[in-house]
Amino acid sequence: MIIAQNLISQDIHPLKTSDTGELALKWMDEHKIHHLPIVNNAQLLGVIAETDILDSSNIHDPVGSYSLSLLRPFVLSNEHIYEVIKTITSLKLSILPVVDTQQNYLGIITLETLVVKIAEMASIVEPGGLIVLNVNIHDYSLSQIAQIVEGNDAKILSSYITSTQDSTKTEVTLKVNREDLSPILQTFYRYNYTVVATYHHSEYEEDLKRKLESFMNYLNM
Image (cartoon, rainbow, N blue to C red; front, side, top):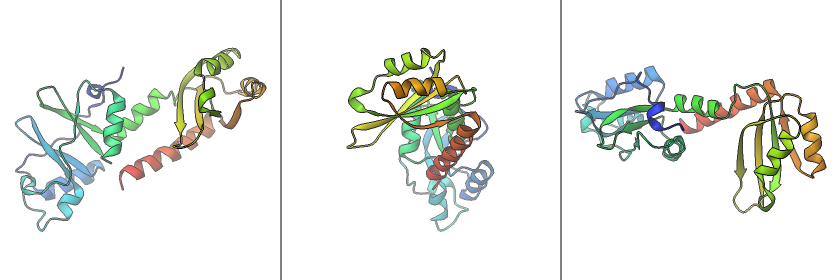
């Protein structure tokens, strides 16, 4: 299980309230991020955004004097990576502070670290292929899908579903450990599954790269 503690990056230092907005902008530029935590005596005081500084009248003022547009976002060190993803994406953050149960600051999770870990979880670097199925929500059965894949001497390395609101259909994306997908696809067709797309290793690497770049651009808007 991957928790917030496992994702902490120690390369980026937090700001103190006495540090200036100018210094904060310098660090943000160096690390290609748009937010930094403000910490005094191991206590997380808040997160300052790049826009908080740029909208101020004087970037030489200490960050402790700025009005912060964000609340005090953080995750506990023992929270699951899914909670990290939910928080960082819903608030459109480039970093997310991690604290312990006494609210002591432990470090931050960067968007870059999170994307790399998601790629590892999805077995992106493992050889194989991708199959995207379109199924009726009420007919969705991962056990049946797994039986089809395993019946063709293959294994599902990872899977996820993508649903659209008010739709009776859902997309099921499978990463399997075989690049020759023909036998698996033939079986899916025989069981009347709708195959939306397939990707071999080089193809889905390029597709994933494009999607990850779009994801990063979206969060950095």
